Length: 85
Image (cartoon, rainbow, N blue to C red):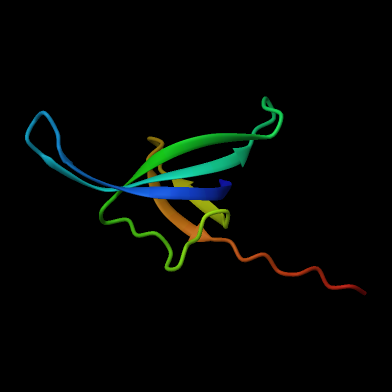
């Protein structure tokens, strides 16, 4: 899904079952036909899923989800300039 990266927040806590949870919550926006403008969502990335280096707010990213809706990859989208003919 092509999105606009909005920001991130480190996450580190122990859940009620006593398991340590570490990762990053990412915030992103995307076009939605049902919404005038953009929809905004957040998703959790486990510690073993790294964000691209030097990722800044408002950059375009491709977010890949698995069949359960969990984020498995975030990659920067580098848009090529349009060449005039």
